[in-house]
Length: 384
Image 1 (cartoon, one colour):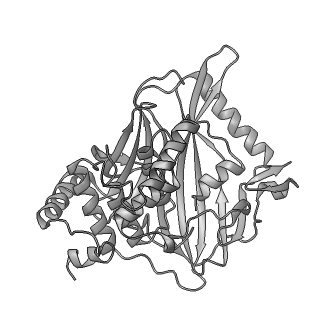
Image 2: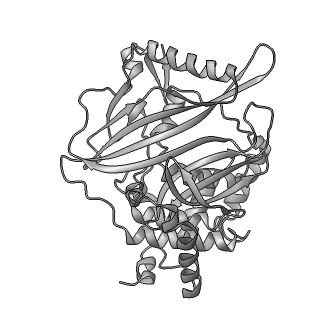
Image 3: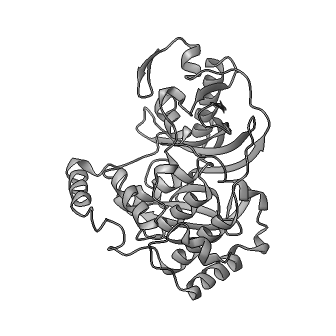
């Protein structure tokens, strides 16, 4: 089966791209991030696997347990309301498409990544086996000192998520402590170490272990229903704009962030990954930000978008050989006075997946909250 036939599976109702554009994108992508970059073929597993549902486990847990004070500026009630009205009013035509899309080179690269994703099948998880999703996630932390200064540092979580072959069965999530990852002065280094020591002491040195059917950690479904997502890229992008209306600093930034969050679960099926890449190609301002980017020891092409409201950039880093997402990152482009030097990567997620025969025993739905005897107030809120 040729590439265009594969592509028709996910966008049968959309005008097909010209073959020249596909060839140009694939050739450019491989030339920029090919063999000389030492691509790790194992990254092809990074996004393959199961069908799961909502926000990522990391995002759900951030509400339930951990605070990562990365700055976000809301659109405000008036801006959010106006955007929601605009989206409803344009329901027939949709929000996507009429405002343009990604830069041509980025669109070609995303199209090639979509084709590669379709061509590389997802791993088979047999009954009794698990898809193991290993995530290294770095978060930015900012503290306001008594002197009125902001001190920032980075911490890393190394988590393991075990996804059963039958998604209705128990998922198992092993959550690590927040290790100091990087600091920018002595005060930040000391704060990062103290945060780590306090967390370890509070848990008696035992990492959090959760177990819940259908990924219902902390009482919430932590992943979206991939089966319900449109596979047509424009319909998918319209859906994303609607569900993210009023979030983030801009509609386009929120849409790209949703795509990054969904991809970094590590469990999006190949056809969903392909549709998400093509949807990203419809977002204005998306461009190639680095031809050969390194993330957590792996290299790929970086495609992202600058958010002018807070002078930051959101990147997707893609393995061009497989169409797998190596990871995503957020970069501070200027020194905004929050303690992060200009050019700092203030957050990233790198994902690897594999198939394993077993998962750890034990664990509860609410992990550390159950251990401490906290009262579940619903929606990820606990009274301890």
